[in-house]
Image 1 (spheres, helix red, strand yellow):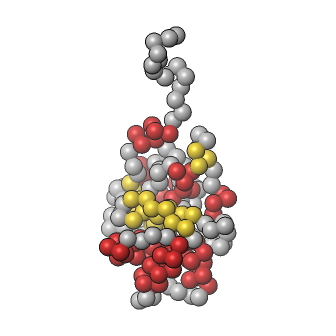
Image 2 (cartoon, rainbow, N blue to C red):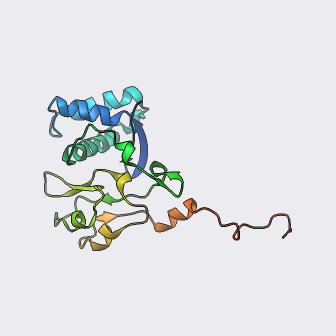
Length: 181
């Protein structure tokens, strides 16, 4: 079974198959994020199982490079199946809820306050003393404590109103379309 992961490409979530296996293989081969051919290799390998628009290859390469760096920065065994740790939120698979942080690397000062607050592993420190999102779907839906404590304002979340679409409709709140009680 091929793994599934959503990554942020130019600020939008994109679902990709097989990325974790590719990252694990690159790690076993000691490929570093600084490798000059990493972008082309990622596009080639990820493109075998996923559609990557030709005009967006550079954008995808940047996003995949960022994800590979986060993959290497994670603590623990990187080769485990991450999907088994995910849960549903109100009966909806977690991967379908677009609630996770993004980190502006230019604003991040590496203070680590967010890392002490977030106990889910969604955020990790990079080798450059910054913070990145390693496990977006490990983030607790509705939680934005890390962003609230981030003094430089480097951590951003989508508006909380997006979660309204995922609330089960109350039977008392349903409109009566037929005029009956």
